[in-house]
Length: 74
Image (cartoon, rainbow, N blue to C red):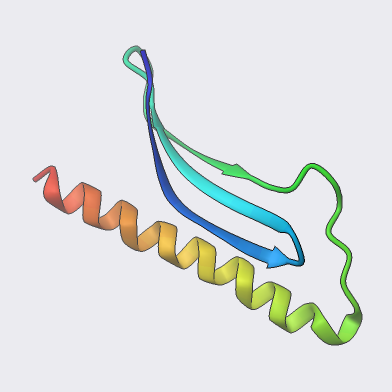
C-alpha cells in the first residue's frame, strides 16, 4: 500500500490547480508526482510572469515541505 502526502497545491491561472505529492509505495522508491491541469492553461503574454511566479510558488512550497518531512525523519 502506498502513502501519499500532498506537499503543495495552488492556482496557477484562473481555475487551474497544480498539486505536488510525495508518493511512497511500500515496495518501490518514493517519487514526486506533479499533477498539472488536464487542459492547457491559457493566459495573455502580459500575465505570463504572474503565472510563472504562481507555478514557482507552488514548487517552492513543495520543496520546503519535503525538506521538513525529511528533516523530521532523521
